[in-house]
Image (cartoon, rainbow, N blue to C red; front, side, top):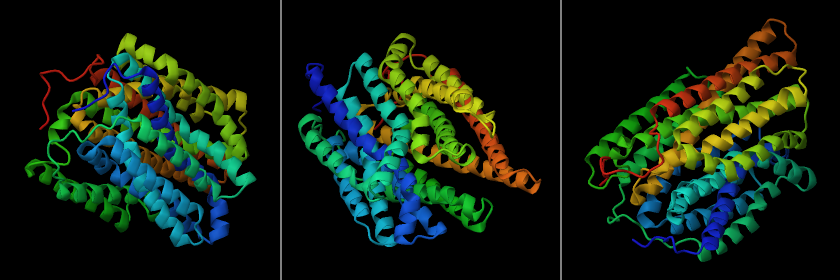
Length: 482
């Protein structure tokens, strides 16, 4: 199949990476930039407290549900083609969100946004694999991509606060239009037009429907678990339904001639371990990001702009590591030790947040944890992505990208739900015991940060003990996918 060769001009490939990262950054920003605008959206469109959650949940459901299918479609019909399709869909949906004049209109547009975002995210890693074939350059490119994914969320908080305070909530969506248009035009010129690498254009419809429905049900159960109750009939029923659909999906994949997900893929050890690490790591990081923002706002009394600025030192450290140091460490030590070491540093940062008091000071109680988390994420994110993608055949890179992104998405949603529940339960118990409101809130956050520290430590142990200690491509002894 036609792929970019090492003779491809270096400047062209790095410009193409910039375009890819701008597209992904737009998706990553959208997961947090909207949170800052929720109070304004509620007042303007008349959402209730319960229905306002659908502005976020509609996006999360379609985004999480279609990552796997989007990656496989990229393998079948071309990564650039699907990237452009997802980008156009996301941009048009952003326009619809920005022009929304009713609750229903905004929720439907957010769902379409999630679908476009899932496709863009699922094939972006595959395009990087197409562009960069040399290990050193691939490690550097993955470092840039990792920084965008890991650091973009906190940039969204800062940008969202600026747009809402100076313009209106509509602009948190409309800002995507010029970015999406510029990325689409540049993609046509710079991204490799690699055709679908599968020799079969048959799409496994049964597998696609069953796994997408399973993921949507599971995500819906998780995001609504705190409100409905984790042992409620609704939550347990949806989780059971998701499990049944997933078993059906596995049965279909074992029998169909051209499966959506070849089950042999999970015999690739590094891919399987990287996904387990990704679930735990995302659970810890998603919860840290949201709970630390709540700690800064509700306990320390920070405003939205102050919260964004508080995350800035960690982002700068993360950028320094991701954009330079991480690639050199990976080329020197492989993927196993940097991954485990980075996660251990991040676990230490979470532990520092677990001891932050209700009357905490930025320099003493916030900044050290932020810096350590930025350092740990900047070092660890690159090896996680490389571990997941390096052993996969090019014809399955979109699928592997969809799998690892789904693992991060599901891990993040589940981790946030679990730790938010623990924080709420602890806060409730302290309030019943007569503890002051701010101190009770802080007590809940401290418990959640402590459990998140445990997630990061377990992820470090899995990566350090079970990953192959080399950064290599699949060997002849590994299973060939059909």
